[in-house]
Length: 217
Image (tube, rainbow, N blue to C red; front, side):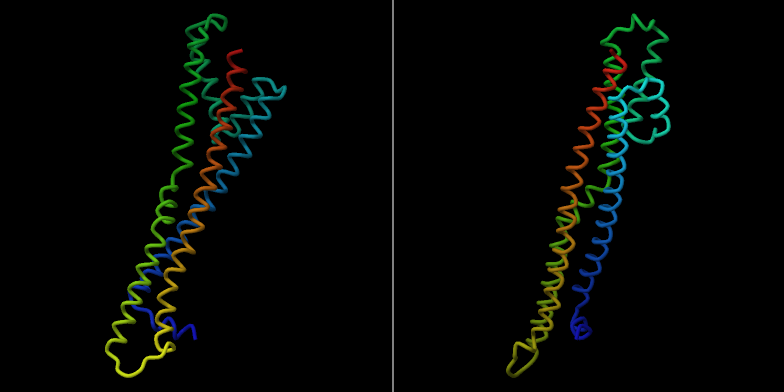
């Protein structure tokens, strides 16, 4: 019976399972939230990039960017246009030095890129910690469970069959299995999300190139 197996649990093994359960909930919450965020940013960035590469006028792009100004690509476009307007106050449109405009665009890009990377990578360290530490937490629960079983058997006399010790060893090994069950999705999810974020960063680079064509040409 499963209830009999859990009756064999010692406090350390039970504590390990509880910690692993909390780590699993935390990692899956981060994975789902980050996946949804990255998918939405990817959709909006790709859409805006296609609009920039089309025949849409600059004023229309400004209007579209203002409606979605919480996304990095649109925010980069707005920041770059605002910086260009500030330069126009000191220079006529024809006499703005190209190097000055390029430096202004680069500053806007670095600002948006840095904020985007900081926001999207928030929580990744927790995923890495879960994937690295969960197996050891499970192993700790297994070791303490085995030690408890050996300690109990040491005080008994007479022949000991395998059916006498197998329940305690089985429930102790559950902790190691659960640790792997928690760590593997966290590790795989971390690598998949990291790859997706790197693709988004490449998309932002493409947005920057298109902004240069629109503003500096």
